[in-house]
Image (tube, rainbow, N blue to C red; front, side, top):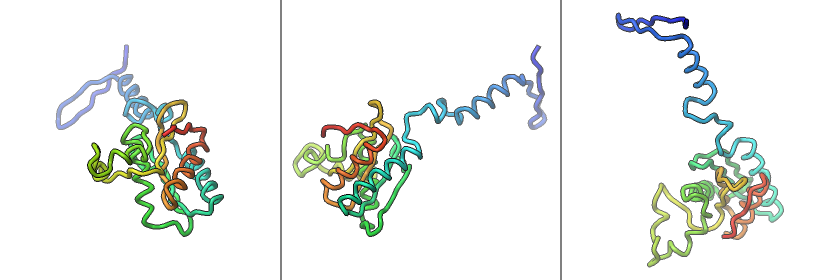
Length: 180
């Protein structure tokens, strides 16, 4: 027979089983109460983010361009950021928005929207949505084993340099680079 506990709240008594309470507490401790434990989620982690930053900084250093590098999770939340010495302060926000643009559209690169966002095109003005998107290159998905775990956004050089550095960051964790 399971032991019962009686709880009193505002003069009322509520019986419940200790095993139910223990099961509830154990579930909260193992998965933060939101279903899947953090270790079971497909989200870029802090260690991966650090490796991405290191790979991107290495690439930026090789081409001698100071960059701002942002890593976001699949929800667009910042996981890591690094501003290299002398990188443009105005590019901080751009790098974050490049990464967010990628995950808000399920892994499409930030450059994917360039042609469609021009005046008269079907997505003209899209960059004004979602708190600001960036529709030119430098935002790439972090695809590991075909799963989107986040994105990296880079800003501070030319578009081609930003893309090169972002790709280097993604490849540092074994990420695959989309063809577009």
